Length: 311
Image (tube, rainbow, N blue to C red):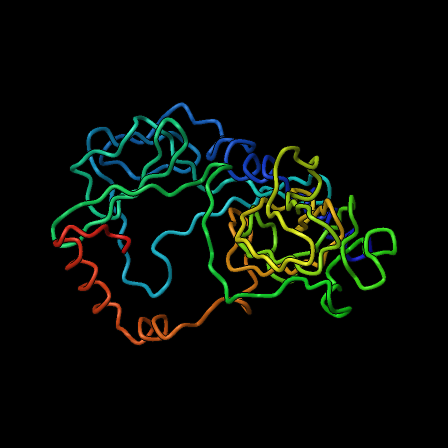
């Protein structure tokens, strides 16, 4: 593994999912942890900083005509952990129930007792309760312009194999039987969870199978991504997790064969997809030409038709 790959692995270990979630939500001090004074502001009184303020059954509004933010919150307290600077929270939402009330106005934000953030949207007089997924299992699928990740028939297309050698590959570049190669996906994704792709095998010396699985995980048993016959050209779509410590996948061949892997989408949670590979379709261009008012009107019309608000 090269020096850059070592750095990638080390950086990912610092940004473990548990650490990221703990630092951002549960692992920090409660916002406004300063000890309250003996007195507190009552409804109608000015807000007292550093003290408990009880608004009772009233609503506190803050308005501004300035061009900047109406409210800016910042907690300048930080702590270092493993060379990473962790921020203290500037805002804490305290859960008090399972759902926001149906009478909540559009734009309302709340947190339920399970730690889910909820948002109330409103279109055409109808309200929708939506969830902003924030758990370790929350992620999204990002389609990309199809990319050829590796093609063992070409030396240039074998560059992303991090452990290429005469042990893992034969003289023509085929993945040897009983060997596992690791493929670097960091050109495409940072901190990816999974990928969707297409696997093709060709010029196999005998009947066998190929397995694709997350880097760093034990090779699965009784599982195959694709099965093939001698000299057969066959393809199959697949989904596989990506390694936790690095943006690598592992590929095992039961019998020597060339492999070709193309990627069409990534699953990411806290990570990112390289914007250079995102598709810019005619549909996206048409949407970008619409004004915000046109998009809002279209979405409201779909809501009235019973179409889900996210369509």
